[in-house]
Image (spheres, one colour):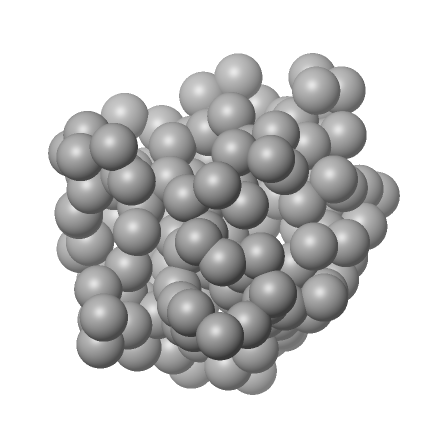
Length: 149
């Protein structure tokens, strides 16, 4: 997080893929700013942060044109909450979900350094902000607000 992030101001990698049911998911910032949240089913921080993200989503505080997309990554069949398709549904995630490749291509492209990992992409396609770790509902609100100010 912060001003020293070399990714801020640079073009975001273009990612697309599929949700667990095979629906194509395309991240297109030209349709409105995007908040990508990289999540791992086995990550205790992710399991605590998703209800905070949901509460923020449901509060209506976020910009109406903000697109929220979860990227499930780092899939590990021997860890908790496998498979991630059932886990993300049980967690009441209602925004689109992009299932990362087996090689974690999306996570690598965005420089994911821990979980949860968030990225805000502006409508110009540039990275506005990245963060790692739990932020809570208020933290999420202020991150999005400052990124899009």
